[in-house]
Image (cartoon, rainbow, N blue to C red; front, side, top):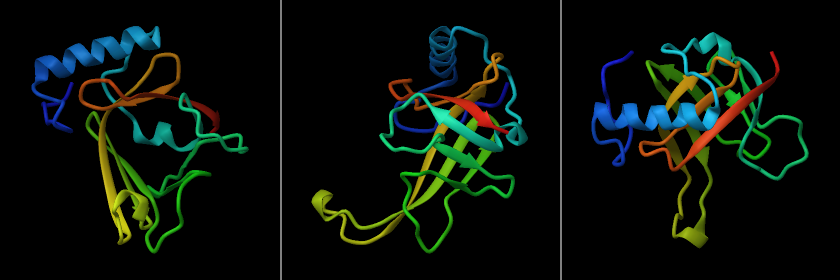
Length: 140
């Protein structure tokens, strides 16, 4: 396993992170692997979240560290992803959203805990597991 590094304000300590990881395994119905191979994430994946679009995939992770989603915005910089230990780091560009009082475009960086699952899926989650996403590969 990896040294504990908090990912968000809900991620208090290594013991709590281990409890959340155990809960993720229960919800997955299979074991989580101790290491994440970023090369295994390259390809197209379907998410457990409903993004409400017509494409067959939700994520297209590329070997160069970029990715696309049918619901993502095109910006001046590409969306990127990387695995750092047990962290999945998502960097994306977002346009202004005046309805949320965001008047300038911004770069968004989200960090989640992650694991490969023994059944071939990939999971990522926030510090307390209240956001848990399972990805199933559809095109390698």
